[in-house]
Amino acid sequence: MVDNHEDDLAATQTEGFKVGEKKTIDEYNQLDKDDEAMNRWKASLGLNGGDPIHEANDPRKCIIKSLALKVEGRPDVVIDLSSPGSVDSLKDKPFTIKEGAKFHIKVTFQVHHEVLSGLKYLQVVKRKGIRVSKDEEMLGSYAPSTTTKPIYEKEFNEEEAPSGMIARGHYNAVSKFIDDDAHTHLQFEWSFDIAKDW
Image 1 (cartoon, rainbow, N blue to C red):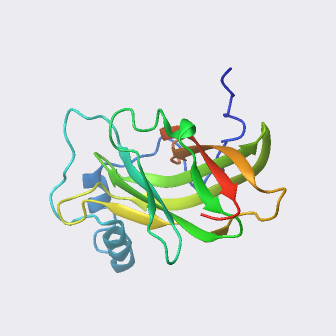
Image 2 (cartoon, helix red, strand yellow):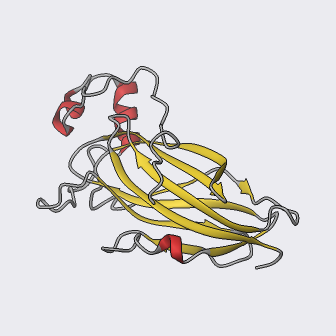
């Protein structure tokens, strides 16, 4: 039986954003080109730097390369999301998190073809079918990846694993990357175990 995660994974809408009002790279470059503040904003997006690196026959606008669990003093646990079929077995291969451990999640990704507006990461965690948490992390807006900026990295806010005998056990999670146009770039299920030790 497949859970319907759509209600759990509904994203908030970015204030002021109008769906469908996308601009091309050229339109962004021409937008208020004599406005110094606008030019700084465009530079912060990475516009006007290097050659695009997308493959013309790949229609994807955002390619999530990996997620990493970063814990100080320990090697990163990296989940490869880039190769075909890499997400299919994640829920059957749980990784262990020590109870009470503080960690960050880091995502690496590429943007292709056009400016990506309001990329968000949504995550719902369930235990024994009951939702125990829902998180939404705004990643921001990004220009297409180029030879000078081929990969974007974003580290999420610090989290702390639950602790105590009751918290220990197996958890299932569903994650989704979605933008302000309500386009889902990647959705996958995974799992982890909270344990007394690593």
